[in-house]
Image 1 (cartoon, protein in one colour):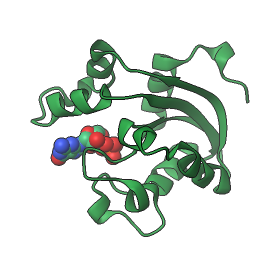
Image 2 (cartoon, protein in one colour):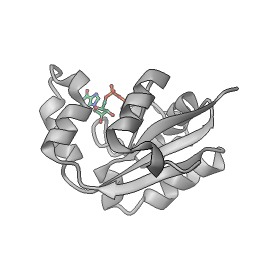
Image 3 (tube, protein in one colour):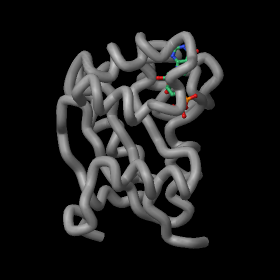
Amino acid sequence: MATERTLSIIKPDATRRNLTGLINAKFEAAGLRIVAQRRIRLSQGQAEAFYGVHKERPFFAGLVSFMTSGPVVVQVLEGDDAVAANRRIMGATNPANAEPGTIRKEFAEDIEANSVHGSDSAENAAAEIAFFFTPDEIVG
Ligand code: GDP
């Protein structure tokens, strides 16, 4: 298995409920290492750019409004097959469809306020990591 890096975001519904530690404990227990981390407030422009691929979707405005509604924690996870591993630990987008034990099953409020973001491919992971971090901010 290849060591990879992926971008993770702990979303405003989770920071609001003080769940950052519980969420990161799941990543660490599964063997992913947090090699960069910052707590920020996304601007409207940042949220629109980050989710640009969804700009034609009916939920885009609501998603941008939600993602700017409170602090987020942006972080880089590193480990074996980190992109897929992170997606497995997160669970399905809609918590109603998420497997037991996943972050979204345990913590998500609904399909929008679903507690975490994770890159969906190695290519997107590289772009999303570069969106928030410079190489010297990532300490493996
Ligand atoms: P992800 O990769 O599992 O996060 O899912 P997507 O890339 O498809 O969607 C990005 C984010 O948009 C999701 O994590 C949700 O926060 C939100 N989202 C996706 N689908 C819906 C939807 O049908 N309704 C609403 N309100 N939000 C959605």
